[in-house]
Amino acid sequence: MDSADRNGTGRRRLSGQLRGFRMTRDRRTILQVLGKVSIPLTADDVLNRVNTTLPGMALSTVYRTLDELVSRGSVQRTLLSNDGRSFFELMGNAHRHYMVCLGCHHMFPISSCPVEDFANSAAKALDFEVTDHSLVLYGYCRHCRSERQSPGSE
Image 1 (cartoon, rainbow, N blue to C red):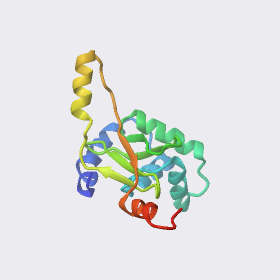
Image 2: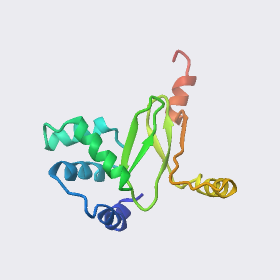
Image 3: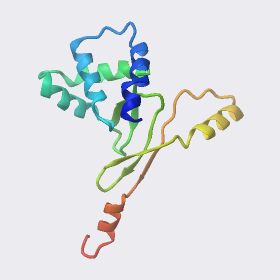
Image 4: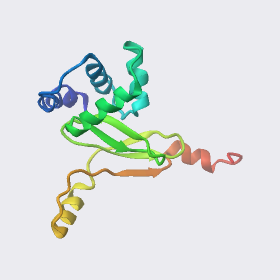
């Protein structure tokens, strides 16, 4: 999602999703942190960034707030690592999928949703209602591949 979308249509959509959501200082700060980044963050990452402006917030508060925002459809939770950690990002008008480098752990967003047509077709064939999906591809980026192939890199 580009910054224009995040600041325009995405903001109006988020505002509608948060109707009736009591906006505390902690919640506002967490939303601001997510709104300022272009990559998904773990709950620990969110806490570290929050604590630079609002020291003393507990990790449990971050998790509770993120869980509530996920349930409202305002935040997307994705498992981007093979260690089971969840990553969070504000939802725009479309969700994103990622390729994750196993060497440097950099996350590369995929520009479109390659799953949508398949999910719709499979759901129709199985009379199944798909409510969400995610796709994460694991491998090695150009830099890490060249490091793995260079002599003496073992």
